[in-house]
Amino acid sequence: MHSLAKLQKQQVGLRLPIYLIEQIDEFTKEYNLNRTDIIIESIKSYIDKQELQKQYNEFNDACNELKDILDNPEKIDNLQTLDELLDEL
Image (cartoon, rainbow, N blue to C red; front, side, top):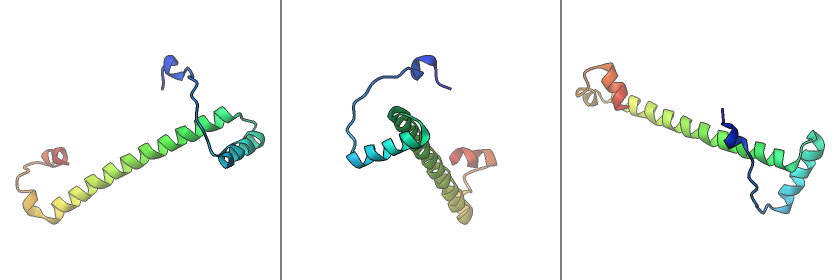
């Protein structure tokens, strides 16, 4: 949850292609929202998607490292416990 200070809004200026503004305006009519609400939700959705992709990539990298270790037992010789293996990942 964000603090009250972080929920305050600050005005920013940006330039958007006309076709994008037209699409935003279609949504404003269809969903009874204003441009700001649509742009905020779009940005939040984009950021959430990027964060999820980053987590997926990190998890995928860890799985690949584990597979490499399991496929090459000589790499595991230096690790004495499962905790050490997990720490290594």
